[in-house]
Structure formats: structure tokens, C-alpha cells
Amino acid sequence: MAKKIKKGFAKVLSGLLKVLGISSLLTVCGCSEEGIVMYGMPPVTAEDRLVTIEGTVTDAEGHAIKDLSVEVDPPAVAAGIADVVEGELIEENDTVPFLRAITDADGHYKLVWYEHGEPMDPDVSYHFHLEVKDVDGEANGAFENNFDPIMYTDIDMGTKDGVHLYGKKADYSLNPKETEEL
Image: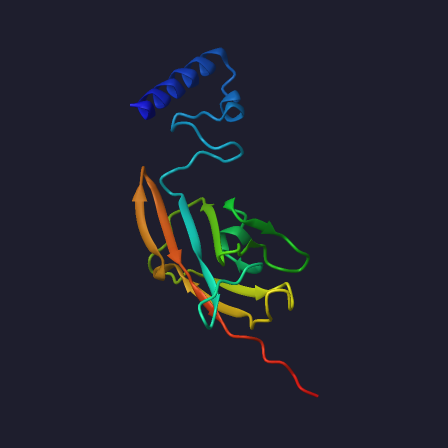
């Protein structure tokens, strides 16, 4: 019921602003004929994809590891047709833009982004890379980095409210970094 009221309000407001010739205010107030949108995010369309990658990083004995960097490089981020919902966008010199999350005390991480544009061609093998990096040195133990290609075909897919949902649970168990003896 509340969703119908919000959608009705957005349509009425949209129509009123169009009549007044100030429809550009729709973006400023966060309204569209599709409904209320998140601040700073364009309206979600049927071609958009919400992608969520989350999981837990543990050591070989199953203990959670905190303060690790988990990074992904989705092609839509590099192409500039994605909006980050959860995670940090990193754009460093001479590298492909990527998203980063830091594992919490439970070893959990979560990265979420919207990809905009044409639907993906099912005959093309879309993929990105996920890398788990030990960036805190010896603070939580020293661990080998993990580099993993992830195919979109391996991601669970669904649809809710007209938005394509892609999700992947990616848990990792890292090995301790071997120390060099002199």
C-alpha cells in the first residue's frame, strides 16, 4: 500500500513539475515516474543489474581474519557505467578502477554496485577478478594473497521489482605466508 502511495505521489509531482516547466527538479528531489530513488543514484531501469559479492575470509583453521582488502574489478566500473552502493571506488594512476572492502572482525566483506546499460549478452563470457590481499602486514598474521576470476555465469541471478539481481557468496580460506629463513 505504501509503495502505491509513493508511486502515485511521484507521478502527481512529476506531472505538476512538467506542467510548470521545471521537470529538471525531479532529479534534485529524488523522484521519478519509476518511484523514489536513492540520493545521488539514477533511477533503476529494467536493463540495470544489482550485483552483490559477499563472503567471509578465514585462515586454514577457520578463524576469521579482519582488516584484509577484498578487491573486484567489474567491467562496468572500468567502463564508467556503474554506481557503487557498498564498498569504496579506487581510481589509482595507471590501473583499472576497482572496488574495495575491508573485512570486519568476523572476516566478512560485502561489495555492491549497480550496472547500467544494455542487458548482458548470454553468449559472451563476462568476468571480473576478486583479490583478497593481506594489507596490514603482521598485525593479524601474515597471509598469502588470493586471486580468483569470477564468471558472471557462476553468479546467482534473479529479478525483483524489475531489477536484475546478481549475487555471489565467495568465502575464502587463506594460507599463512611462508617466512624466509636466512
